[in-house]
Length: 68
Length: 68
Image (cartoon, rainbow over all chains, first blue to last red; front, side, top):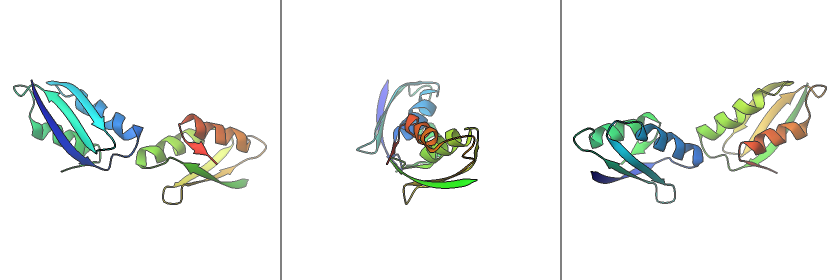
């Protein structure tokens, strides 16, 4: 398992947390997702053999947030 | 039809707009709901014979926002 911390802009409330955690956790190969609203970060634990960071970023972007 | 403008705290993003507009518009007697994120206000047009302001406020409160 690998871990990555992404900087994500535009997450402002619990709905945003649910949108990000809900969508990313559905990706095959992702075992854990944790949004930190105060820091504007998303910690993801994933299996690099099953999913790439680009796909994770794209999923967050698709929810309407900017991944830096 | 009557109109009321409510001051609502905690609405920060499009998800919040959807939560408020979606829930209030489902109330019988409510004909229009419009959230203004920048002002933190919710404009509601309603039939006073069918629904009261208290029920509208309670619906918004149930979505996790403070109605002032």
